Amino acid sequence: MKLRGYLISILKFESEKEDKVLINEVNRAYKDMSSDQRVSVWHISLYMALLHRWCENDYANPVQITRREIMKLAHIGSVATYHKFINQLQEFEYIKYSPSYNPSLGSQVFLCKI
Image (cartoon, rainbow, N blue to C red):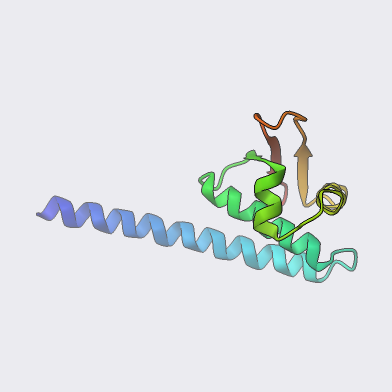
């Protein structure tokens, strides 16, 4: 019984630690982006979708993504809009984007300022 309580406390600590990492990253990203005049709501939405995938990837770079998945998460309906803003995020040095051009492989994204 003591072991179970100990394991639960470790898992709770790890969860709280991960929550703090996420909160700090969201705050940092929002602060950086809100002061950058080049950034629009589309950039922020796309970055938040990428950040979500980064969390699912255990807070590790690179993140494997597919265009379809990220467009759905970011509520982007146009392929042209997706490509424009993901390329701009790379140009602005918020991400490093490595497209695969293979839908079954997916592309790699590195969140730069993490």
